[in-house]
Image (cartoon, rainbow, N blue to C red; front, side, top):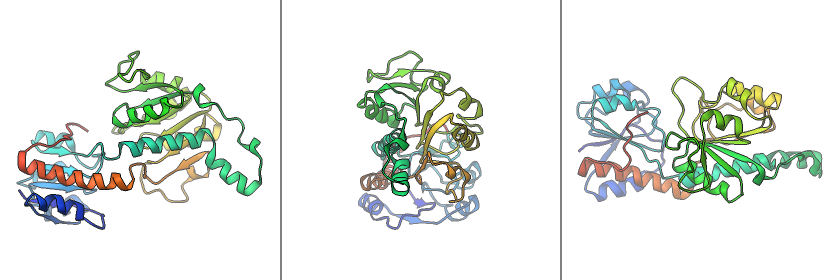
Length: 317
């Protein structure tokens, strides 16, 4: 089978090459940005390895040999998965390469928000040695942490939060309201309950197409002084509504590793809030996670070429 990269910004493909060539196969690299680029350059591909280039129904219909696409990372926003399913094209992602890293990032952001670490770092350096500028700070073990999305990452985050003694609730389609998760320390709730009962919300789910999960109405129903963390995907939080909620104090602090319209310019108006922490979609990264991602992408391409199956099929988006 013919393996092609639609695009990549990786400076080296040595890890992928060792896996693919080690299996007696080869690949070519294109640098496509648009549907037309993919159609023009990847016409002979059976298997696509994909980073950002759009894989749409039109692309699928113009690649006569196209059978499978594997995407670097968890998200498949740039792939029309439902259209692929209709055509019998296999879509594969790599959902487990950075599970611990994203959970760690969420925990770090939560701790920094509640303990006001980033805020006080700046205040101490600029205004002097006065701990009262941080007051009030709540004891973590008295807080209810709501987790939206209780898959690999949400579960890993819950394990970390549990060690702090927090009460944990979660909203997920695999967890019924009132049900205790197999771990024994997380209770299922509805989305409405999550919004209304949480002191901290950490987001670990994909976005909904065409609508925000946390919009103006959701912020109005939250506890005064809530903290919200997103290192899942942009487009889940209405950032205009978040701006207003930070301004009026409904939200005591927000931490965003993912935002709508990335990359975000430095003059973005949300950045004026001192109780906002931002990181540039880096939650997935560690040296080890990056290596695992590259290896697993190549392994999935090889596995499909050899067996017609993959370990991480995506059936809907």
